[in-house]
Image: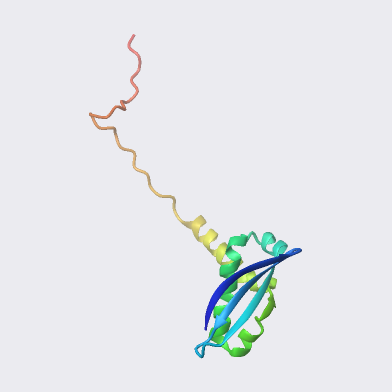
Length: 123
């Protein structure tokens, strides 16, 4: 199934992202995935990431079973849906913390360089 992002509507603390899906037989269906803004803020997920997140939900559901995709016609995102993003972010931060800092080589300035080593004043 192919999905096309149609835009969003905003109502209170919820933002609904609308998609149109087209299957192999050219039948079109609409999907509306509602995101609670304080939930995204609590997990430090930006609103610019929300349409992509919803698209991932749709494509994963379409790869599974028709029933999994059927429940996304009108769906409210749960905190459990955000766990893969939060876990991935934590793993990346942990890997970055264990990585050694890059080595920086200090080289002498060349003879033609305008930078000269600081010399002590003559007495």
